[in-house]
Length: 186
Image (tube, rainbow, N blue to C red; front, side):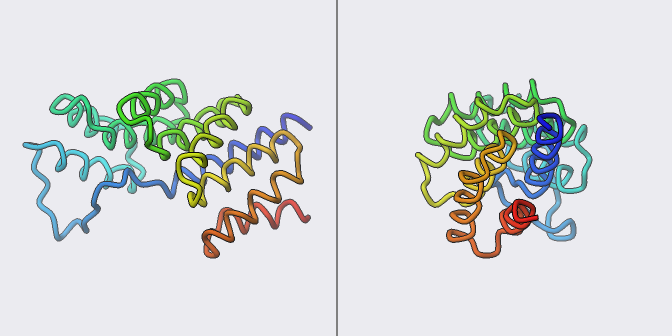
């Protein structure tokens, strides 16, 4: 049963990362000529590759951006998401930890690191990070959803239900929370 719950947690984590953004601007392919001469251009290119499922290319773009600006939390965050998509959770955790080191109030860094911990099956560490993300941003609907998924993986349906409902209260269109709440009632 525990392996089944961890499997469910991994599926939820993968689905959540698929919708992640590095919070940098995204432009359609036709509206931007991407130059590799500055950090933001490389981050934008990494975002496009991430969205296209080209994770190795995205990692390369974010790494190049970090060579120009090694304090850029969005490059670390994007690269961490790309590593997570490849299920390279150890490198993802390192990058998300760096975002937190650079900006201890960056709730998304805690949320994303929590998802990577969840992907590794380290649910208690995931919960600690989701709790911190929520502490920093009490309106962070996705962090509530992710914490609910972690509680679901631990078999605590009451806490999972409460978090999924809170995520929907904050964001009534949160598909992940809707799907997770529905799966609990089946």
